[in-house]
Amino acid sequence: MTTSDQINEIAGALAKAQSEMNGAVKDAANPFFKSKYADLSSVMEACRGPLTKHGIAVLQSPSADGAIVSVETTLMHTSGQWVRGVASATAKDDSPQSIGSAITYLRRYALQSFAGVTPEDDDGEAAQGRKPNGVSAPSKPVGVAMAPKGFDDWLTDMAAVALEGTARLQDTWKASKAEYRQFLTATYPKNWDALKATAAKVSVAS
Image (cartoon, rainbow, N blue to C red):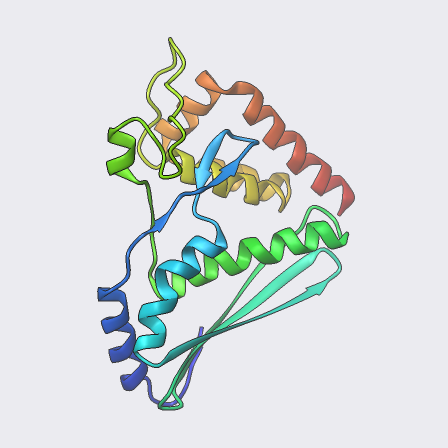
């Protein structure tokens, strides 16, 4: 990460903005893992108002070198101070669709990190057994244990890591919580097999 010579103004503005931010609602579906996550629009909705109110603009500039995709994110303050960082990932291939998906993924996670936004479930609606759009929430399948807290977010991250190849997937797997690994292999073994297959294809292609 790089910054302007001084960051006192943007640091103060960002602190105020963060105190007014709500969590990003998980309203997008990941069909691969049958889970929910906060998409880019939800993250932007959670932070754009407070950031703008306190004089902070967000600039995200994507680039690609083959299947290697990067997004440079800059928070710029009206004082002229700024904070900048680059996030990179390897897409499944160099097709426009894969590159676009990787860019969206990187924009979402970079913005979450820079703005300090965390995804959150709509607990009030979940307690009533329904989602915000009025559709009833599906019940947990009989015989399936409750997933550990944070499991869905971890699965979403692992899906992105798989696009970086087998070595990266294995390293991330080893560093992950044992309860996440055990729940996945015991409850959704086919999903874990699919992750490994995806990573293997990426490794062969590279």
